[in-house]
Image (cartoon, rainbow, N blue to C red; front, side, top):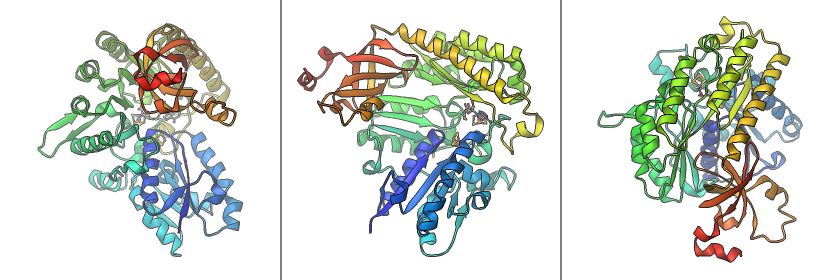
Length: 476
Ligand code: SAH
Ligand code: SF4
Ligand code: F3S
């Protein structure tokens, strides 16, 4: 009998990929997806612990299911991902109607755990070892990467794919929960990465994004014992027929080597887009965060990128209101944002996480309203810079990988008079979002688009028809 699966995913690219893989493994067992919790037999929440807000949101969404579960006790409710690893049994206490808890290192167990629950064996929990609960080897083995064979039939966007190259993190920035919940850093075997990428390209994937917490720190040995770095992987991926774009996130400032930047410059398929979080523009704050670099190091890295990679775009993350951050520290961050002119920045208010070094060592002493003010101020500056730099692109032709109908187009779907022309959204090689009128047949293709207007985070354009294939002339 057909079973229905509802899944909600929050968090980073790791979670997006994990959800895709879990959905694929359950679809193989006969599940179909539904967007309505009340229709689902199994409801999964793929969760994030990076800030308290992410966890609170999940608890509040779970809370909304209490009545549903009371009326339909046969429904299986599961919490997977980072919060499952972080809170473990506590989730059963706080949300007693949850049946299943599974950490990100145990995802392969989900189908059999659901079977056990359905067979009346009660609540199930599978998590990995904590960072102090065994030898390095034991802990590493308990965090298993979930990399089943990618089935093109089960993929949500056939032309785009995330490819995992690394799990875990060993950087232990003092504010960050990720090393605790995702376990030790492990590079995936280069042979597996290349095999998976070739398989995806053979089945129509044109863009892959290599994912990991610090992908430019990637290190792994192949079966002959040769050491591979990210630059080596990129060089091999460039050769895969059918692949047209290769992106990678996220980067660690200290590991942005000349060799890697040469690869970015020389390999045509590799996007000159680099997400390299700075977090703060003050050396004192960076030191307390234990980021392992100074502002001078970051400036040097930016100079190297400017010198070596034509047409580059750099984006960043910032935490405002970290323990002890003075107004002077914050002004230094503002200066760096002005100086570096990031394409965009993700700005977060510091959220103390139990179990991190930061929570043990420092007091979370910046009042919420100050964090909020700094967040607003920095965002306004970044938005001004993004807008100014986007304006410089007006009149240029950019190459857009078309991802699908824009949100406005989806909202207006019922009103659209001509179903063949609609507003589409896609991204440039540098990851800029572009909206333009086109034909749904263009989805999954790379189109030349001339930019005529912009907002801070969106370019508006028009397809350059004379450069396109004959099928486009039908558009008129
Ligand atoms: N591995 C990536 C970041 C992963 S978390 C890297 O090192 O760049 C994504 C972002 O969340 C971080 O860059 C940081 O800006 C933010 N973040 C992490 N922990 C946080 C916390 N405790 N409070 C607020 N923001 C946090
Ligand atoms: Fe967290 Fe730092 Fe690792 Fe990024 S590098 S995941 S911020 S500990
Ligand atoms: Fe969140 Fe886990 Fe990613 S804590 S940011 S989903 S690795």
